[in-house]
Structures are given as C-alpha cells and as structure tokens.
Length: 168
Image (tube, rainbow, N blue to C red; front, side, top):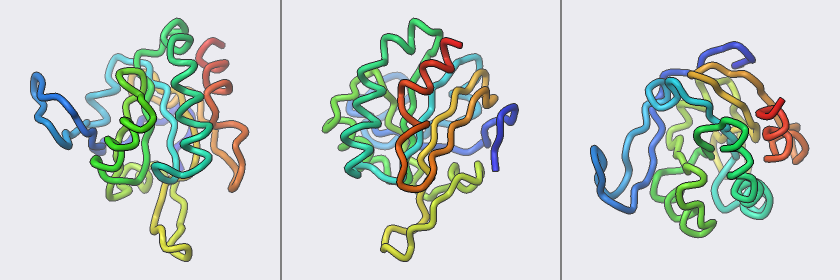
C-alpha cells in the first residue's frame, strides 16, 4: 500500500472535457499522473463511486466549499478520483457544479486504485473493484499526508482534515 513519502504511481486517469481546448478534445482526455502532479501541490481525495450518497452530500461539496482556502494554503489543484468512467465523472461534475474548483478524474479500470493498494472489493454487492475512501496531500508527485477512511466512516478523508494538513 502507498504510504507517506512514496511517489504516486505512473498511471493515467481520464477527465471528461466539455470544451475543446489546447491539446484536448471534447470527451475523455488522458491525465498522466506523473506529468500532471509535477511541480504542483495536489489535494487528492478518492471515493468508491460517483453519485453515492455520502460522496455527493458530503465529500464533493466539502471540497468545493473549501476550494479558496486550499488555494490560499498553497494547493494548486483539488482532484476527486473514483473508479468510474470519464463520462460518469463528467456527469457528476455537472451535477455537483465543480467547475474549475475540483477536477473529477476517472480511474475506469481501477489501475490507480490497484497501484496504490487502496482498493475496496465490492463485487459481492455487484459493484466490482472500487477505491477506498481516502485523502492525500501530494507535492511534486510525492505523498505528503495520507488519510485512509475506515469502512463506513467519514472522519479523516473530509476537506477539513486535509485542509488543516495543507496549512500545517
């Protein structure tokens, strides 16, 4: 399992883009983790799935509400990572109105979750392999803090905990 001091795995996440721009087309676009984190401080939180009750009611809104405080604390970007496809993450971004405050990144085949060792096996519930709920602060691709949530809990992966660590 990934730990503080480790480098994030060199996997590729996907991000749905609503607008064609420099180097990206409308639809899913690759986000190579190693390149996207280079020289940046990232507040990353991962969730088992898009549109789940706790994630939609508490996690994403919490990070949205604290986005300006994260920026003031030196965080360049906030990432939400979930084992869903880019189309689902794009729809969830629209639903949650994340705009440019939180990047909604898809780990469609769970490659990132597997590489970090932070998987949650929900095959018995018909949901397949998912990501654990956690948050981490990443600087230049290295994990600075890591908060792994206990099953069924919402105590350490929230915006307030990670923001305090970013300020600390």
